[in-house]
Amino acid sequence: MTKIAELQLRKEVSYLKSEVGKLRSAVISLIGEDPEGVYNPQFVNETLRIVSNAKAAGIFKDKASFLKKLYDKG
Image 1 (cartoon, rainbow, N blue to C red):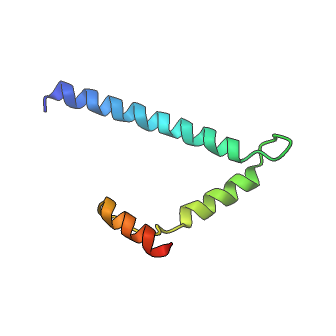
Image 2: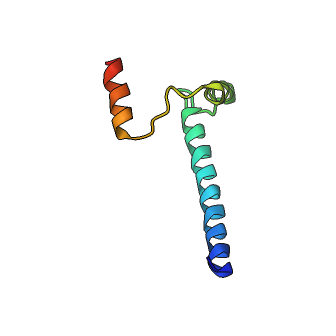
């Protein structure tokens, strides 16, 4: 990979990270609204705490293992 291509790739990844951060912020602000539409920071903080401590329910190597796990639970 040339130095210019690597620099361009790094720039694009940095931009995408920024965009994902903005989208995450927007989603959190949407779920953090109470019925009156006012931002509810306690709800957002509690939700983030729960989500950040959650463990993955399963790890799948391919679509077959995913479907097997899915049908075994049903």
